[in-house]
Image (tube, rainbow, N blue to C red; front, side, top):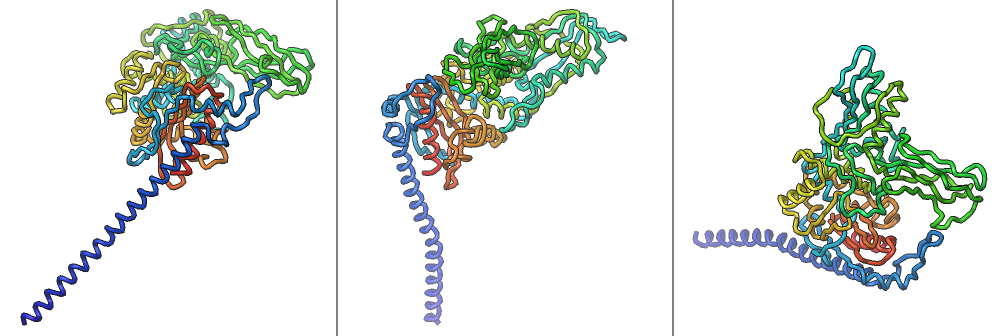
Length: 539
């Protein structure tokens, strides 16, 4: 009996040993797989580092590429451009989106001029504090009475509350078609609403009320050279068609004749003088003779100058409106008169809040996320400024740039987003004083991705080779369709920050800054794009 019991005990011990060994084998296998994965990742990191260092040192023979230049443009030898590359200030940070592991860093905690990468902070702030479903409201109001004959005994007031898309922009965003229909499309609907309310004549003024935001058309730091252009349009709570005029230009009928032009939307607000001329077909136009619009600050006289060959297609020029509310009042008056409303007063502007009034017509915007998509896809400066002020107005009752920036600082501090590495002076990035670190930018992107609106925020970014400001970049490369990022461009400064989906299935978060580089923008962009391609291929 003892012998049998000993044999049984031996069997049990053998069984336990087998079980322990069986349990140990998967653990050992998992440990080996983990070590192998770590070795592979380290090898990928090293390959990526070598490629990046070669690019930034000017040792990559494939860059910069030769590209066609406009007539009269400066030609800089490739060897000179390569020599300039390492003299620039480069800041890079690439991390794994999952565990935050740093895959590459260079000057990650140094300051850089972010340009339009600033918009990532503005749009994230708006989504966090207003929500993706927030809507803007524009109304037509009056404190006067309306008699039985349709006479409005008082002023008619168009009240703006910061809607950035009070235009004919196609929403949701369409990468193939930005606008549809008349430029003043939504104002026309409001004018029709006024007529439908029974108004046939107005004995007061047509007033544009822009008091929802503080009166500050241009943030400090915007260069005066930017202000006539669409990207430097003045900020106003009442913004119509991006506060810009669209000027279509075509050749005249004969050589030497003035060019043909048309302005949309037309409010009779500016006086246009046409000094542009038609030249023979096939004429090569040097840069100084290209078509351009000139307007002195504070003037309502616009001069069209330049040359246009007779075989040219139509060209579109843009001119920023310097007094957006006054222009909106003039345009709205014209639209009302076109619908038979007789107006005895003038077009006026109100910048101080007024008492509540009767609403005659109303437009409610698309959800905020649609505005965010337009801002990030197209890098729309004016719209970003409007969002910054909209957050301030809703949260503090004062729609000013200063209050918006205070809220941005609070937002960064509350969420542990390296607030001491963010020095922002506007909402769009056009201000030259703005400073960001790659580390702060990546921290914001990682935080945003984890929010309930994170996927919509990522989808608002341009996609390489597909849409927005990345539509023509990284096409026919491994990065096409795999990079979703915000671009940034100012003189001697370029930036790109967002998310990358690698060939191996990893999601990366990155911020790439090129500053003080003394390179043509196209060359700095080529380098940033090459780094993105390397990210996708190596990781």
